[in-house]
Picture 1 (cartoon, rainbow, N blue to C red):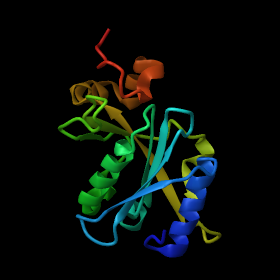
Picture 2: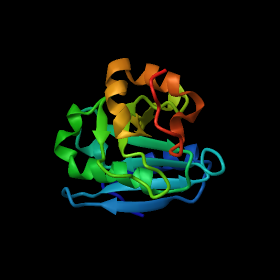
Picture 3: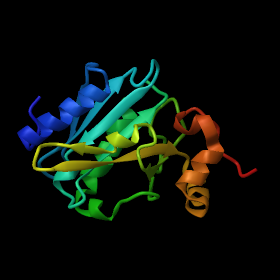
Length: 186
């Protein structure tokens, strides 16, 4: 599938396919926010059975920081990656202001099997540190990855108060489980 910035897109998709162990990707285009479109690339049963790994492509073409988003969720639904790609598409002019610890209130459940209705932007907790930056070519063109982690909007104030790292440390192993109950302060 040809994507905007063809050589750059091909390099990024080769990277994503490699991380997903060459699983067959599902592509979804979002273009309500302008052209070229933002693409959600998702892989079912990656990194493990019953999980979904996804990335956006296109955001890095709009921001000086060259960012793209990763989603890794204990769910087989593509909707988690599609939601963040839709957000990127609709907010493409403001992406340079989005960074670690920022929150996105979706205002309605993101997927049918979960009541989670928000995201926290974090460093890619689901990828090895050497994969946080994707080197596109020998001229050091690169893409910085951020992870969009689903949460409940009711948790956003606590995330802001504690910081994402401490919040997810308290949530523990279920941090990427969209079926977990809302976290309550101990």
